[in-house]
Length: 247
Image (cartoon, rainbow, N blue to C red; front, side, top):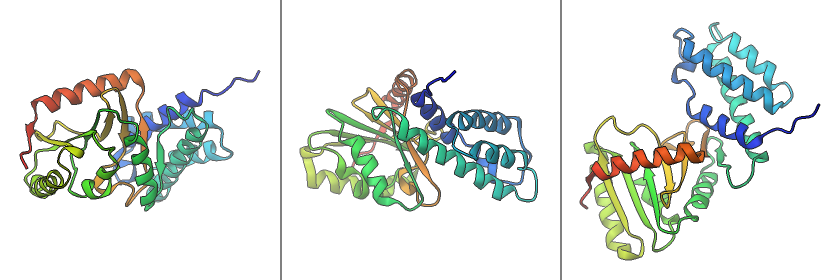
């Protein structure tokens, strides 16, 4: 009996798993129970995608993570995961998909972020603990005129020293044409990277804007409605308690 695949659900779940890839997957430490759970979930979804030999290859690489070819097998796992994410993205409805960005594909990054920014009618809210001044020169000009750009990042002195003059120059040049607000959150309160459009739609980024897809593949994934509502509420609470960056 043929059962039609729920590509939207597969894509969303693979996107979440790509964001949660264990950082010690490529290390030399033990294979923890958390890693095994993550590998099991990823295998189940890759099996649903059904892309040729990917499921058995993923299973074999997972089973041999503790051997001498740890890094090789970890790279195989990551490659298969992102490949299947891209396949699921191509089959999911256009309204829910995000973007898979290969290493070094800077133009693809600009295009994907610009596409999201273009949807804004009122505000674009950026959450990134490691945001730097390059965000303004690389991505901020994709903000439509008249839309308020809100930046939330960690309260680190080196970050503030770099962003403060850049934001001052932005305000001096664009004034009310491209309004901008920036706030710093206390250390360890920000962990995720997100784009929130008009306080109703949210996308998750696997890497910081500062080095997006520069050293490893990255994804931008639209967050499901219920989870998006919770994240937007949480980030909004942090925003209201954060300190304005006076530039």
